[in-house]
Each structure stands twice: as structure tokens, then as C-alpha cells.
Length: 312
Image (cartoon, rainbow, N blue to C red; front, side, top):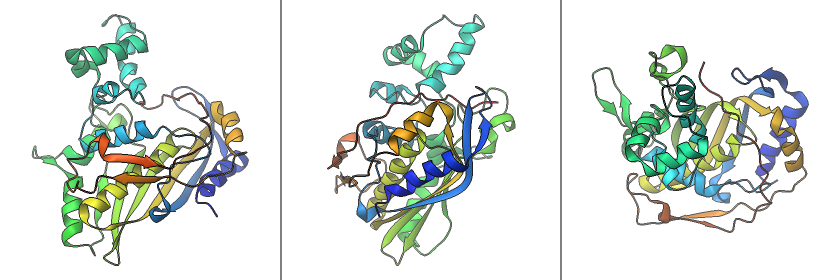
């Protein structure tokens, strides 16, 4: 059976069996189940969903942004990727409503980020989100810990060890546990990943995701972490193995119910193949042009409104 049916079956499970909840900030209804798992053999291709077209260019730029340890949206905006715009605009809008900054639409705000480096430095910052935690975790003694570089080097030296975990969940910067003004714009939904070598040959990656927006977010997350596993396999000298996706609160927002029903009518097509420049062996050297997506022929896209959650 095509591995994409795992995702489609989970959509159907949520619609039929999910508990009805309401999102904290917006009050929007959602249906939710708890504790699910999907597995993808990366030798079968990159698990980029085919029952709707997924924005792969955005996935790749976002992953490269994470790998840089960046937390400012300017890199994404400069590359015409706008998946994080709402979270940067949210505090600016709040400040403008309080009379502290000039009023701007989100489109004007994003244009200002692109054109004005000083403005981007002040307002494009999302706080210590994923890439910062992966590459520049602040230790109590002032050091910055590069979790990803540590894991990569240890995987090369000691492939049988079991402790190669990279965490984005840092309580110092999450919700009320953070000092005032220090919380991340969006506390990590995909909280940590675990790397494992099988038979000294293949690299597996397991992701634990605490909050899973199945229609919009999870298709990105599947492809992004599968691609991350393939990249880490290349730099550590292993073959890509399995991507295991463990989902905590797994939900569909009510403004996506109709779109999900449309997607469920579609049959999966073969997964595409990702070709990566084989010369690149250093995690810090990858650029967008090192990647080529081949044979991706999905069904048409299905649009859905982003629910801007986060905060408290």
C-alpha cells in the first residue's frame, strides 16, 4: 500500500473519532486525537504528499534557515517564503494598536522587512525558535551549544549509541516559564528528533511533534524531517533509512474540514526523488541550488487559511 495512506487514514480517523476542542487564542473549533505514528521508508522516495501539491521550495528554504541557526524572517522573506510572516507581524500589530509603532498592513510590514535591514533586525526576530535551539542553545554558563553538530560528529564515531537527540523545547523560552518578553513567537510544535544508525548502514530519524496541524503543518513537517534525515545521512556517510513521525495532539481545524474531505477523494501518486549535490559533506555548506526535486507530479493544491496560534 502507498505510504501516503497513513496520512489519509489519520485524517479520516480525526474527522470520525476526534474530540471537539477550541483553540486558546482564536476560539476556532478543531477535532483532535492523541498519540499516533507514521513510518516512511526513505528508499521509497521523499514523502512529499501527492494528494495535494505541497510548497517544496518553502520547505527547503525553511529547513536551510533552521540549519543556519537563524531566527529572523528576513532570509525567508528575501527568498519569497512567507510561512512565518504572521508570527513576526503579530507583535508588531499589537505594538501599533497601542500607539507605539506606525500602523501597517501585514503586506506593508513584510515589504519593510525586505527593504530595511534595521527594521528587520528589530521586528523580524521570532525569538529562540527551532534553528537557534538546534545550533545555538544558550547554556547557563554563557556557552552556545550546537546540538546538531555534536550529534553529527558522534554518529560518525559511535553509531551504536542511543542518545543522539536534538531538542527545540527549551522551557526557559516557552509560555509563562519564560521571562516577560523572552518567549518564542511560537513554542515548538515539532519538539525534538532522535537519530539512530541501523546495522552500521542506515540512518533513521524519529520526530516527536507535540501539536500537529494535519492539513497545513504536518505535510510540511513530514517532508522537512525526511529531508533532514537524508541530509544528515549524507554528511555522516550512511544511507537514508526510515523517518518515524510520532504525533501528540493531532488535529484538524474546522476551517479545514471541507478541504480535508476534498483531499480524501484523491488517490496518491508515486513519491518524488530528491537529488542532493554529492560533493557536500558539511552541514553548514548546503545551499538551495544543491537540491533538485525529481518526478513530483501531485494533484492540484488545496488552499487553507493559517490559524495563527501560540502565546498565552
